Image 1 (cartoon, rainbow, N blue to C red):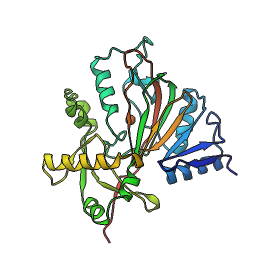
Image 2 (tube, helix red, strand yellow; image 1 turned 90 degrees about the horizontal axis):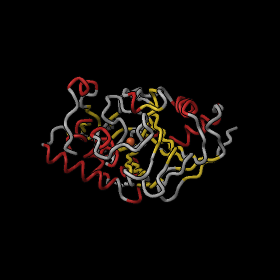
Image 3 (cartoon, rainbow, N blue to C red; image 1 turned 90 degrees about the vertical axis):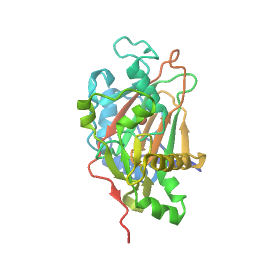
Image 4 (cartoon, rainbow, N blue to C red; image 1 turned 135 degrees about the horizontal axis):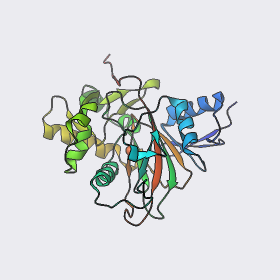
Length: 293
Ligand SMILES: [Fe+2]
């Protein structure tokens, strides 16, 4: 029997999970119970977890193969599958200069509503974000569930959106912030990806596959596509579809990477330390569009 308790957050999104120590290997029952809760709530919050990097990786690998982060300076303790989400320089353990171009692109990128890795041809399944050092003020993460937003649309609007193909492109976020393009060989690794705007999920749920990596809508001119994507973002980030996580060290938040957009809230980048570790479970299959009856 599973040891966990699942407490849905009402009226907002996600569920809190208690009765489990993630530093221990998961039993088959607890793994299944977490997967069930994840399928139902799409965002799970675990508090008071004290994990080494290896334990964070071991927990994450229960849910699939992990994505690799190629840049050694972004990796936690040499773990290729653990990304440092931080303003702290790994080599010096000091705060990064705010105007460092790489750091600036990261902080600007994560402050927009986005879905991790949505620019990949096979979108990721889930991210596990673990809080280690948190600022006294600010640095919360906002989450928005586009499954709930989709459910709140009118039937006519859903039908219109289900016909559309959205283009996700990592370069789009850089363009929007006036940052120079990445070298062509780096861009070639993640070319623009065409995806259904409405993703058909298991358990009959559907979700809007949007976020800041979206560059346009197939068949629409740039302005029209941008206007639609902006409208959907505004709609999907209304308070009833969102949750604001105020981090404490030892928090683990596991979220669905097809339907949960998120953004980092401001904090004192040049005066406060913030360090989280992220793992991301790789996708195994293309997103499914809605099949019209
Ligand atoms: Fe992110």
